[in-house]
Amino acid sequence: MSKPPKVALRAIDPLQDRYSDRDGNLYSVARLIDDAKKLPVFEVPVSALSLGDVIWAGENILGLAFHVRKCMKADLNCPILLDWYGDIADGRHRIIKAIATGKRTLKARRMTWKPEPDRPAEKA
Image (cartoon, rainbow, N blue to C red; front, side, top):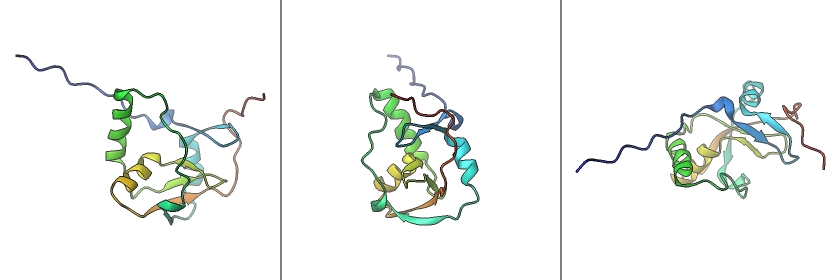
């Protein structure tokens, strides 16, 4: 009896990540991280984060497995990034890992300015 082939997951490519702020503007996560790299790092309580956003809507099992793998490999020493409103701009996989492992705080940086979006929100 032969074994079924292993399922290959897509490669992680952080440069393709985009962040949509609460106004619907789109930003390159890589650019936001680069812009914020000199900001001070502080400890933020996980309970202080807004955790109600729907993420990965419509994912199938394979797509969800991709995110679970990223959560398991997430580096909790790398600060998450909060935007100018205090919303999570980068770090959802780290936050999920922190919650799953019982960690109460995370390292974070918070942007204190709102940069020009890579793609402004579409007007209704």
